[in-house]
Image (cartoon, rainbow, N blue to C red):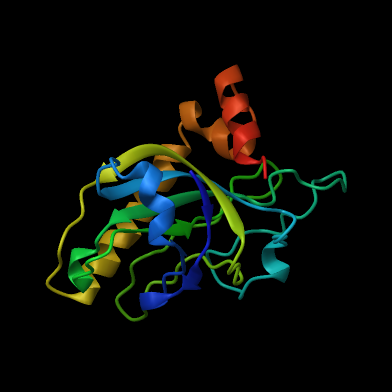
Length: 199
């Protein structure tokens, strides 16, 4: 999907890139539900600089602007992601939408950062990238997690989103998928990466 970010919002402390409904027209036959994939932000409109851009926290990504040898990291604007396509039954939405939550990046020169953890005394903290409102975004959907559900409480919704993040991350860490996020792998993966980063 080649999309344009209509707004970036953070309901429940979970930052999402929201895609305008008219952008979904070519993909109307995609089943509603929760998916995982890889997203790239247009580097001419947004440059991600890791910790220099983020609020400090236990699940912030490392500084990814340069590689260990000081050269620019071509993956700096590529993120694993989890996304919802559908109507969000909990909020009784009547317009279909895509909401994309970016996950911490996979890098070869930084230790992986933890995903959101459930705690009893504090709200779950989700990965946060600075506001990229209006940025073009390419999205490569790689797998399906579950259908849309309605919920009896906000807490149940947030917990399922936390689990979705974990499922997405673990799925994308598998050898068959890791190349989409890190830029290595088989020829078809390389071709998909070229499309992902073509703006």
